Length: 405
Image 1 (tube, rainbow, N blue to C red):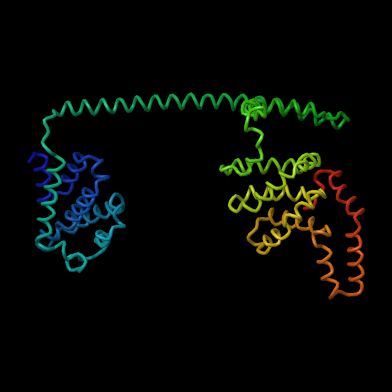
Image 2 (cartoon, one colour; image 1 turned 180 degrees about the vertical axis):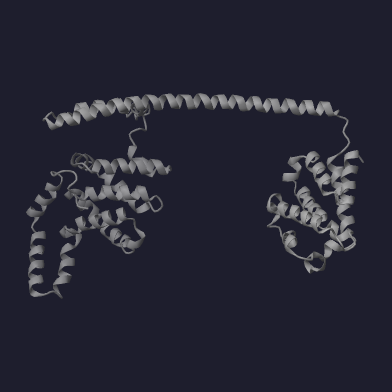
């Protein structure tokens, strides 16, 4: 047994709490004390040993001040390092020890005051010390030197990493500073242009485009570098991105189609191929997790419904029944989904094929004479194909914001 082991055992026998834990914390590696479950349990019981030492070995008349200090030390341990074992059933009763007036007579702590408890704990301590302080032929100076070399290597690695981060942050700072100066200049020009509009000088689209180029030149260059080349095989199937495994890709593809559908020219372009409509309908019915994708697909379909051919196709595909089923539980829908699904349903039902006439005739059965007269007039208007065609075709001729919503 080494001298260190003897000193630890002697401090244990004498109840010298301060000396014992100074040696314990100074020579038992942190890696063992913090991670080894056996070491943690042993340390917990060692704290109990020193906390009740005066109660067991002072003949029943312990010094109150010293006892209070030991109990306070044990309480501090429980609140700090010992808190890690608070969820262990084995140790849970001992967390009440500092608050019990007379632990010697308390049934929960009966085993602590048995004659066999301290010798058994001492034996565990000796075995633990013998295990971690095995005799080594390595000189202490060599151990210190090797440890110093490892520490020096770690510090060098940390320095290299810190320098790398410093260069990255410096580049970001320079970019932010350049963007700031550019933004200040563009802002001043825009203010001057806005003031010029008061005197009748209009802002041209070319000027706005040049401002956008100055503001977003870096982003534009990055976009061009990653732009789709439709001459390469496989790049024509852009619509397949609606079924991408990536949630972000599906979202932005749906956003793009929804944005195009917001313009009359965009609706005209997309309506040329019914495959777009079929894929949107399929995505709408399949998408149940990604709310953003479904909302944008629904918004695009609602805007498509402003065009008569697409209306006919959606009615034929049974979209009305799907919307009715969706709207059965409106509390589960977002405001956007509720608004656009109702608008889409109304646009489809305005057609005779959509069943609006049947719905109106249900109200005739129980309505007043005046109401019946008005409903019959509405039905007559619905059956007027010329009027309906004119209304529907005029929707896309108006401003893009004048949509059913």
